[in-house]
Length: 92
Image (cartoon, rainbow, N blue to C red; front, side, top):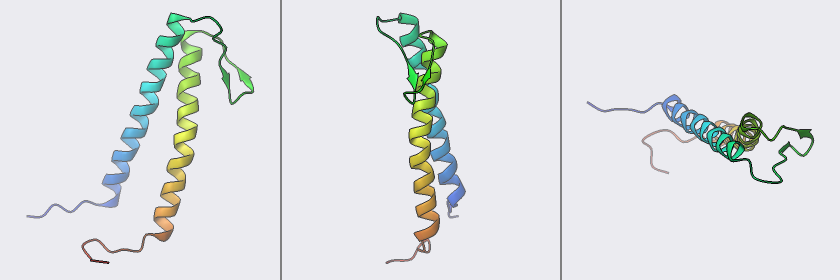
């Protein structure tokens, strides 16, 4: 009995890791906001001023990481869909 992994299983794993990283960043942002260091003025994308509260810093961290990793993830998916023509189990 062989277990053959489909491309959707790999994409699901990457999506789970992506969401986990974004949630972890939100938790760390919340903790930093709860500590409330001096000079904490989060600005989302350098334009949108956010309040220096736990929820403001959590949103700042999550939105920043989600957008950066999201752009990279979309680029990787685009390239892999367009240029990956290898068949599973075949030697190059």
